[in-house]
Image (cartoon, rainbow, N blue to C red):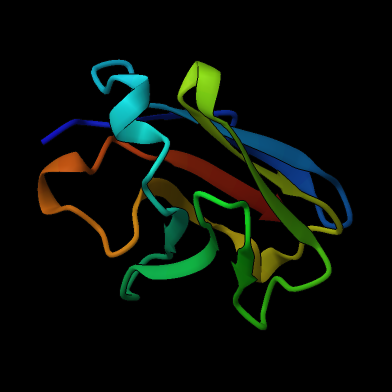
Amino acid sequence: QVQLVESGGGLVQAGGSLRLSCKAPRMITSTFSPKTMAWYRQAPGSQRDMVASISPGRSTYYADSVKGRFTISRDNSKKMVYLQMNSLKSEDTAVYYCNEFPFADGSWGQGTQVTVSS
């Protein structure tokens, strides 16, 4: 299984924006392209939940809590998945991970911390 690498997190004020990136450096394009990819997040003391997913055909799904504020996208040629996060709220504070959907246990990366100050 292939470990994914997330980046782009940081500290931002409520109402601000961040763009997260995820790359699959060890995955070949022909393996990456057919996968549904997703972003997950885990807040302290909480379970890891999926917030958005994108299919090979670029159909998207969003959790109700982020719908209208977050946008997931992918670039198969670069083996990258992105999460544009706008109108951030304090409750978006979490470590964000990308993975396949359904997730592959061996593919979790280190995640990227997003902290939203109110």
